[in-house]
Structures are given as C-alpha cells and as structure tokens.
Length: 437
Ligand code: NIG
Ligand code: FE
Image (cartoon, rainbow, N blue to C red; front, side, top):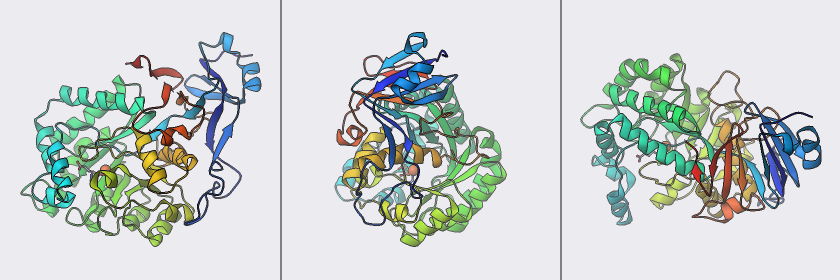
C-alpha cells in the first residue's frame, strides 16, 4: 500500500484515453456515421485513478486501485459515485491575451459585412492591436487570468495562448511576458505561441513586415515561446511569406503551427506538412488531398467550430481528416471575433454541426489537443507525454463532472458540467468555490 496525493474512486465512467487496439483508434471512415459512437474512447465503469507527484500512478477498476492506494491514506480522496471522470481538456488554439472587445463588429457582421471586409477597413485584428498596444501589462494580465478562469470552469486544464495583437517588437514581447506570468499565477498550464505574423500593420507592406517579424521580433521574443504561428491566408501572408516566418522561427527553436485554408485554400496545409508543423488549424477549405498530406506528415488538423459559428459560415469536415488516418483536435480559437472561451461549446458544435459523436468530440478535446501541442514528439517540451489521457505517467489533470458520462459535455451547452478540476493532482477549480489562485 502506498500513499497517494489524490485518489478519485468509484467513477460511474472513467475515460482513460483513446481506445487502443485498432490501428485507426476505432474511428469510422469517411462520411460513415459512427457505428459504435463510444468506441473511440477507452472507458471504465466504476473506475479510479491515483495521482502522486503530479502524475497518474494508477488507473483501473476501483477495487484494484484502492487496494494499492487506499483513499483513507491519500492527501485527498474524491468519491465520484454516479459521476464521470475525464482527462482535463486541452485547448490548443486561443488568442486569449488582448484588450478591448469588438461587439460593434458583431452587429456589423450580422448586417452582412464579412470578416475580410472588416479587416481590410482597418477593423478586426487591427482594432484589437490598437487597444492592446495601449494597455498596460498588468491590465492585460488581469484580463488573461479572467479568461483562464472561464476556460478552467469549462474544463480546460491546458490552454495555448498566442501573441499577435502587438505586431511590433515591444508589444509582442509584452504579450509573451504576460502569457508567462499568467502561467506562473494560474493553475492552468499555459502554453505560449509567438504570432507576430497575425496581420500586417496599417500602412506597412507585407514583405517589409515579414522582414521585421524575422529580423526584429523573432530574436527578441523567441526565448518566451514554444511555437511560432502564422495566418497563411489570401490578402494576409502568402505561402512563401508564411514559410519564411516559420523557417526563421524554427531556427530560433520554435515549432511551427499554421492558420491554414480558413477563407481561401492557399496551400497552408501543404506548407504545414512540408515543415512538419505540429498542427494546421481552421481548415474550412481543406480538401481530402490536404487531409492526406497532413496525416502523412503527422500534423494534427485542428478544427475551430466556434469561428464559423460566429461568422455564420460553413464548418470544416472532420471525416476527411479521420478517413486519412489522422486525429482531429478541437479548440476554441477564443479571440475578440469568437468570444467563447470554453472548449465544451466547440464540442457541442462539433457534434451538432460537424457530425462527430460525443466520444469523438471528447477524444478531440483531450488526447488530440495534446498532439496539436506536440505531446507525441519527444523533442518538444511544451506539454508532457500522455497529456489528455489518464494513463500511467500522464499529468494528473482531470475533471470530475456533475454528470454520469462524457456525453453530457457536448449534450448540455451554454453551461458547464464540470464539478471540479485537478491539475497535477491539485484541486484547481470547484463549481462551488471557483478557481483556486
Ligand atoms: O484564428 N484568423 C486569424 N486569427 C484569429 C482571429 C483573430 C481576430 O479576429 O482577432 C482566428 O480566427
Ligand atoms: Fe486563430
């Protein structure tokens, strides 16, 4: 018998991670409805998990786990009777550090203005840049901490945050410093991404700006980031410009991520595959060929259904990526254009609008989110191996729902079904008393 820091036992359902044993993880093929909707997750009835020193040390049937790790001698024990226990959600794509809001553009969009028209008129990202440049680091930090509170209340225990509302060296660095301080101050694990190539500042030529990102920004910020992202899009950064930025980022040790094929099919997926980026994100216009290229290169397609929801446009097709043999990750894309910081809302959209089963949506919000942050690549230290699962050795990041199964996460929307969240085995959130920070 051994003392554990945390023992959660008696869970009506314990989601261990993706199902093992089938080469495709049990995902049905292209356009086939899931025949066994739960088959993509390994789930235990009456399950338990023990955490010591921040990591899972045992997971299995309650009677086996408690024999080795008795709840009475654990620092903390949770009787999860009647409730589901899940790995914490991994939100692998947010722009959560910004000032101001764009509620007026929301109304303009409802009147028919497109995202690109707003950006071309100096609105959109560029308005948030103006507000963000003026904001103090302390204000930005307070706001980011508030956003992380909301993300955690929705079940995210790891959140990637991009810079990209500075578009000049000082502010880009300030944003990444704020992201680092937020990681120190908040229980959520915060993963920093540099995205100086998010938009082209007013009055600057794109080529000149790309030079600045590479020559001025990257050397000044690279020590603060794990990934480098770029908005590879028609009228923003071309494939060649995006490649230059990402290759330069890689020379500074930053792993590429790509905003690809969102409004136009420009070739961002091919670029991501070529550079072995860790993820290609959005992919609304991606084709089956793009999906095949991503799967072959081990790039995780990351779908962000909150964005087409906010813009009133078509959703990405997850089946073509799954049929290509890859995983699909889901993330929020939380930003002033898509003001939805909780990952379960994306899961609901993925089920209702994109045809994922609840189990597929949970796999995409946990294990696959980890892959989109390099969890399976030993050379990338941003997140630990096993993240998004509760297998032995995984981080002790887990959720106790106030519901009996994972299906309640996408099923109930506009609310959170998370009763409590643990990060590294420590209590980080309860529905009753909020976030511990
Ligand atoms: O991923 N597409 C570019 N960047 C963000 C939007 C940022 C913004 O509109 O402020 C995105 O959707
Ligand atoms: Fe984005």
